[in-house]
Structure formats: structure tokens, C-alpha cells
Length: 85
Ligand SMILES: [Zn+2]
Image (cartoon, rainbow, N blue to C red):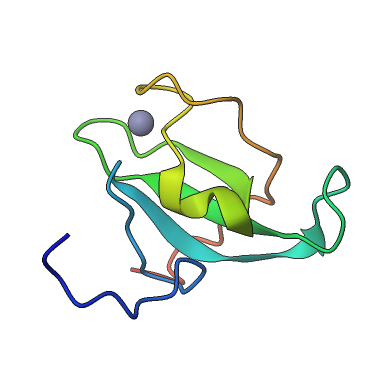
């Protein structure tokens, strides 16, 4: 709202209105959704930083499964420390 929105919701660094940030695309597809890649998201809400997976089409509306009542996330590989520091 207000901003010119050309930002891709699947781009690393994107943060949606629920403060869920895209870290990267995961190297596998969501088995439950045909042709959907899984993305590694991280909650940016204070004190949370929970990490989980989401399919691409849900990113813009994703809520944190831990602190914001979102639905359970998909599995993601462990984050490689230092990559995004
Ligand atoms: Zn959270």
C-alpha cells in the first residue's frame, strides 16, 4: 500500500506485511503442490526469528507459525550460518 510494488514475493530479502522474510529458495518442490518451489522464510517479529518453509504462492500472505498463528511450515534444510550475515 502506497509503495510502488514491483517487488517479487519470491525474491530473497522480500518481507511481507506480516513481517515474514524470504531467505532463499529451497532446492526442492512442495510435494503437495504441483510445480511449486519451497521458499525458506524467517519471521522478523521481535524475539522470534523462526524459520520455516512455504510455497511461493503463499508468501505474500504468510503468517509466522510460531508467534502469529500461521499454519505449520514446510520442512527446510538447516541454514548455513554466515551466508546471509
Ligand atoms: Zn514469529
